[in-house]
Image (cartoon, rainbow, N blue to C red):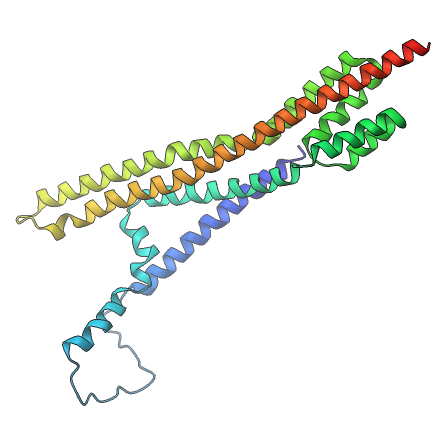
Length: 281
């Protein structure tokens, strides 16, 4: 239960990002709506008289500036993608929240394993189990946690220490792998949502062709653009999420190797100490 608050915070961040995207999209759409009929636009300054008519070369930059407004940017791109873009937006925000949470968690879990083992084993040989447990308590991360669990059973023999380390290792593994299922699901579902939007866009395009008496390229451009935009969006979401998933898996594998090596060193040290005590007795 010590890490449930992190996942509640992750879910809250995803919901807030999704709500912010909805609000920004609705505001942009509201800004693009024309004035209602019968309403006159009030200009703060009277229009200046036009003394000369602009030439064609002077009109071209003005038209290009109007066409390259905010509506033709990300919001317009999102609107042209159709309804499936909302599901893709949610997937992207959820994936981003999980990636940031995993980066923060794994960074905090990283420690200098060699330095930690040197300190723990040195304290264990010179000062005893209590000093080694104190060092593990002051150090964060899964490796210190499993070492501490093993030292708690040091008085019951090496076999008890190994069982305690295995149990603690399973718990720490579940902690490290938390969220990877979400990333794997997003990397698989996002392209499928994009392909679903592709099918939907093609259906709309053929419906427009069937309903029109004369077929033109402009008529079917909306459906085809919807199909291409959703496919591209799904792939753009899935590729970085899959890359982040593979990166986290590689880091967790390194953690596993370090935990196994540390547990073996601890058990060997405890066995040597018991053999020395038995030889002295």
